[in-house]
Amino acid sequence: MISKEICERVLQKAASTGADYAEIFAENTLNHTVNLVGGKVDSVHDAQIAGAAVRVFLGLRSVMATTVDTTEAGLLRCAQRAAEALAEGKAEVSVTLRERLSGDIHPILVAPTSVSNADKAALLKEACAAASGYDAAIVQVTGALLDVDHRILVATSEGLWTQDRQIRTRMMVNAVAEVNGETQTGGCRPGARRGMELFETVDPREVGLHAARQAVTMAGAGYCPAGVMPVAIGNGFGGVIFHEACGHSLEASSVAYGNSQFCGKLGQKIAHEKVTAIDDGTIPNDWGSINIDDEGTPARRNVLIENGVLKSYMIDKFNGRRMGMAPTGNARRQSFSFVPTSRMTNTFIAPGNDKNEDIISSIEYGLYAKEMGGGSVNPVTGEFNFAVNEGYLIRNGKVCEPVRGASLVGKGSEVIQKIDMVGSDLLCGQGMCGSSSGSIPTNVGQPLIRVSSITVGGR
Image (tube, rainbow, N blue to C red; front, side, top):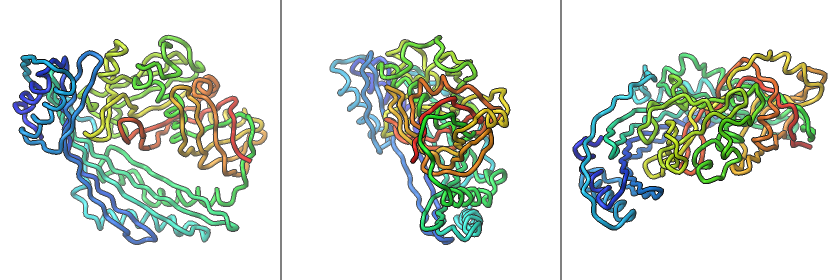
């Protein structure tokens, strides 16, 4: 996107007032979405994001300037603004860049741009038709097929010049069911860092049926009773509990400023010994995977918690300065207009040795949270509140009737000490995580787990 020679001159300008580090981040991103409502194409959206950011550090000070003018003149003006905002003075800086090829472990077989809107709409229609035909109680079905082609370039005053291309594809189906005047929704949203070959392993019909089944089941369910009880949390998107309640508190954006429940606890036991949690950006073709982060640091596998002991934080370059620790390949941003910071990639609780049937049978009375929904968390305290999209009561060690309106309420540092059974059926779910550096694709995951005691909200 931008030649090494131009990047060298821009970096030299950025550091000309005394910065001890300068960086260019440039991107060209194409977003494409086909939307379906009532079995018909409702809209087709195309959006392009193109621009660059110049960021400079001086000790623990940081300034970033952005531009959509990626000509040399435009980039030099952007660099001048950043340099002047950071310091007053003059410094002679020489930058020599060398290209680093990080490789690509995420092969794309069928680029989405090579597939027509008609073919994409046909896949959506198949999914939505399956949902609509599932049951007479289904009153509305909507669907979307999203593909993103995200190209980035990173150059730094440390001599780095590198690029990456990230293609992701995702199908989303939402169904609404009405039973006895009560409506409930169900959804299914599989995605991957793949092209249209995603649908060689993802059956559109199954996507639609999953959404419809969940909507009908919840529409016909009674309300969940409230109280403190043991809860079995299902695999896949159930991992959002760890992601939100603990993961954000392990990001340097919180830890570096003392705003985390896990500050100063490296090497200490913070969770049940059955809990091992990992953030791994190197899993081939996974939704949250990257070759490099948005500072050019190669992706890596970071063991955050091992057998209950805190082993690592997720660290970006700037916050790593405050912590005196090296970056871990977790600097991410929604686009060039956001300042990058430490963020998760594919974050999950590792498989354990407990059998699923033993986890369920161990609960005399409690809740089976088969599928989790969204929620909120305070990373300083770790206090969270999450909705349960699909839940069932457990009685005498057996999964019984469905219940709706359930939520899980607790504190991250406490709940991970109460995860006392961990199954072996690891599965990940796809989501978009919002934080100070914008909305980014992240995987969350876990096997079936048991929380020995947690507050369940309901009626």
